[in-house]
Length: 50
Image (cartoon, rainbow, N blue to C red; front, top):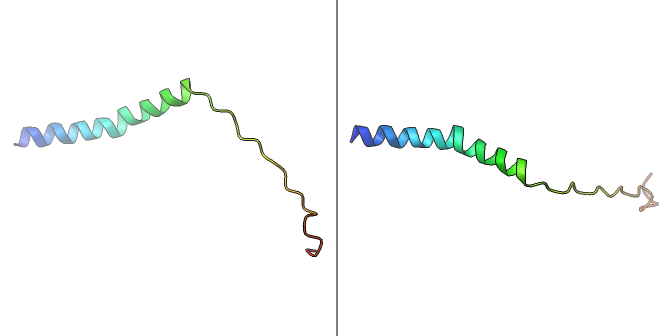
């Protein structure tokens, strides 16, 4: 019983600290997303605003 709890906790720690960051690193390394274009707002849209 204690052996199962130990290996379960060990597996959760490995997933949290090794597998998840490695997965994020590989995803960001190999999948390139296009940056979003920023549309400048026209400040003259509301003439009543000072």
